[in-house]
Length: 188
Image (cartoon, rainbow, N blue to C red; front, side):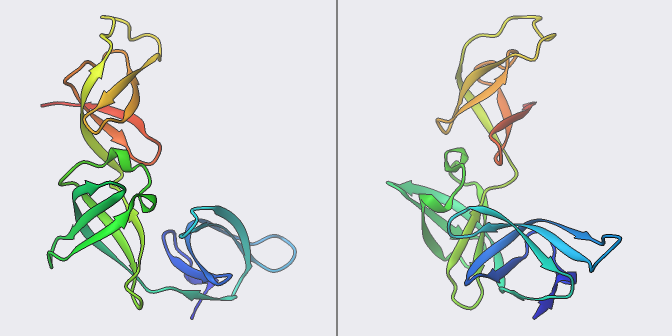
């Protein structure tokens, strides 16, 4: 049993008979009245984000979870096959557990969050950013860097990403997997 003083981002707690990840929290000590903790909780099963306020000092149930590194091997219809990097054990997860699954390419490392007691897979997290090669895009205009104009580009996984005009076919780009945005062009 933990209290609200132990709350951290990324912590998994049992709340309303379900598992939630703490996305964001803020300790508030108003001038009048008792202190409290304002949180944003993401439901692990549905992905829905809710706001909740805990009174300061309230006991919370922390779910024991383990974060393990897995390598993406291949996709079969709507299932993704992953291999543990140390034990070489293979697991299969449905596409619905992966957010932005179309930014995943073979051989990539992902983080799998499992419930420690039941060994159930809760979440599969992609790395914060990935490097992909642009397979198709319209040619850009030389010297047009004054405006913040974007164009569509198809990357090697088949995803369509909005990129600046200077990005050409064959360039490697870094993509943020959380919001699918272009970060930078990668040299070499």
